[in-house]
Length: 598
Image (cartoon, rainbow, N blue to C red):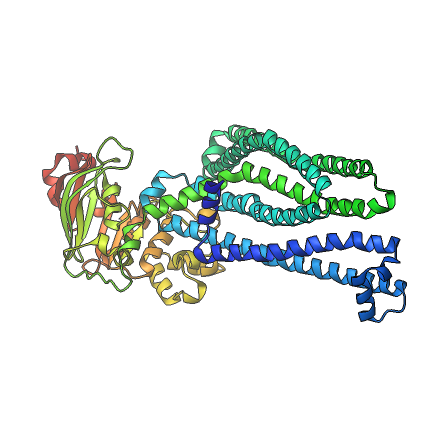
C-alpha cells in the first residue's frame, strides 16, 4: 500500500501534494459535522418522547432559561429549528468541500496531461521511433482520464469516507460499547472477506479491459490512416472484425466490472440490517425496556443510514483502484522514463546561447546504430558543407541518407563523431541550431485547418505575418493557385490535406519551410510528389537561393540535384563517391547506374 501511495503522490508536484494534504483538514471538519448531526437525532427523538426531561436535566433546564422559553413545547420548536440549521450548515459545508476537492482534482488532471504531453514532445526523436503513436494517444486521452476518475478520485473518496466512518464508529462505541464492537467486527469481517474475494478478479479484469481498449484505438488509427489502400484492396471486413472483436471483449469485461461495482451496496445493506437487529437482541437480552432502547435503536438506524453509503463508497473505491491502478503504473512509468532520459537541448542549453554560422558545417567521423538494431546505419561519415553551398545525398533506399540528415537536423545523436558548425558541436546549441533550419520532409503533415495556418504551422493567428506567407507561397510556386481559390488562404485543406493533390501538399510543405526565412534548407525527397513541370518550376525557384542559403537535399530523382555544388553517393551507410554532377556522371559507375545510363 505504501508503494501505491508513493506512485500516486509522484503524479503531483510539491505544491499539489501540500494542497492534497490540506484537504485532509476539510475532511476531518466534515467528519465532525457528520458525527454531530447523527448524534443529535437520538437526543431529539428522546426529548420528543419524554419532554419532561427538559425540566429535570440540569443542562437542558439551563438552556431553556437562557432561551427564555415558556414551555417544553416552545423549547422543542427551538430545538427543531436548530436541528434544521445544523443540517443546512453541514450540507452547505459538504457541498463547498465537494467543490474544492473536485476543483483540485480536475486542475491536477489538466496539469498531468500537460506534463505528459510536454514530455512526449520534448523527448528525443528516437523515443518516437520506438513507440507506437496510437499508444501515446491512448495514454494521453484515456490513461490520464482513467487514472483520475477511476483511481485518484476513488483514493480521495476513500480517505474522506474512512475519516467519517472512524469518527462515527468511535462515537457509537462511546455510546454503546458492546453492541457497537459486535457490529463493527461483523461488518469489518464481512467487508474484508467480500473485498478479498473480488479485488483480485477486478484487478485482472481492469488490465484486460485496458488492453482491449488500447487495441481498439490502435485499430481505428491504422484503419483511417490507410483508408485508401483498405478500400482499394477491399480489406474493410478484416479491420471491422478486428475492431468488433476487441470491442466485444472490452464491453463484456466492462459488464462484469459494472456488476461487481453494484454488488457492495446490496451486500452492505444486508449486513447493516442484520447488525441493527442483533443490537436489538443484545439490548433486549440486557433487560432494557422498549422506551429506553428507542433512542439507541434510532441512533444506530441513523448511523447505518449514513454508514452504508460510506462503506459502499469505500468498497467501490477499493475495487476501482484495484481495477484501474495499472493506469497509474503506465503514466508513472512514462514520466519516470522521460525524466531519466532528458534530451540534451533541454538539460544543457541556456536560452541566451546563440550559435553563429558563418563558415561551414563539418561532419566528423559519424557512426550511428539504431536502438535494438544489429547493424550500423552509418559508418565513419566525414564531409564539410561550406555556408551557402548546396549539396545532395543520393543513393538507393536504405543507404543511410535520411539517417545522416536526421543527425544533421539534431534529431538523432551519433554514437560516435560530431556535427560541428564553425567548430561548435550542434548538440550544445540544439535549440538555436534548429531555428536556423527549414525542413521539407517527403511526407508533409497537414493539419485539418486553413492553408494559412498550415504554412505558419504552430503559430497563433495574431502572430502570423501574411507578407512572409505570400513570399513563401511565391517561392513554392503556389501563389497563383491560392489566388484562384474562393477563400484563398482561409481554404480548409481537410484531414491530413485530403482535399489537396500530392503536389499541392508538397508545395505547402515547401512554403512552410520558407516562411521563417531559414539560413539552411533541408529537403528529404521534397520533389517526389511533384510532376515534372512543377518540379522544374520548383528547381527554378530554388535557384534564387543559390549562394544565399545552405541547401541540403536527399533525392532519388537526380534531375533535382543537377545544379548542386557537391553530391555524395551513399551505399550501406558509407559515402562511396562524391563530386559534382558532371564529375560523377563521367567517372562513377554506380552513379551512372543510378542515373540509368548503364
